[in-house]
Length: 106
Length: 116
Image 1: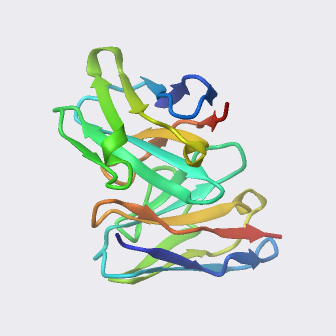
Image 2 (image 1 turned 180 degrees about the vertical axis):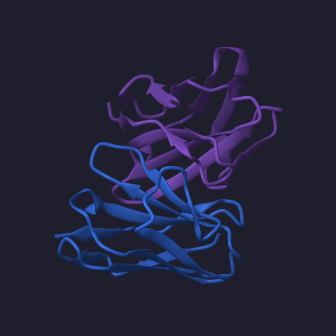
């Protein structure tokens, strides 16, 4: 099973600032990597798939990059609605696995 | 607008069977993968398994002997059965579909507690 790790566990930022979240896979997942945002009481919301393709209706301030084992989610200018937990997920190898999440807080 | 809604008992006794149903509105689930994923404080997000409308399935090896996923495309529903539950199966259970193996549509989740 591929183990996903994320750093940092918590990221403290101010509105308008840039946030950079990292995700690492224990072995290569090629570009088969997705990012999700989750707010309390809600299911995850897909932000990015294919490592860098923004999902439908996702604002352009969200961008993904990376391949192989190292990936990054960047939020260029944080808005108040962006404070949430972010998860990466690999779908290259079954069972598909998620990282433990990064909480973006004020 | 595609919406998913999980339904089922919120409390299951140890050693009994957990059964959940996901009802999809706003889209046909034909040609979609129908996924069950759970989230617990101890294990985070865990992919339980999926079924394709054609009937092919893939189950997480850690749960494989206890899981059944079925799909009813005509009623836009898919279901999860998990046998011989223990406290470790206490979690919020999500159904998700669309978008291949990076699901686009998710339910809001349903909390299932295993306790006597």
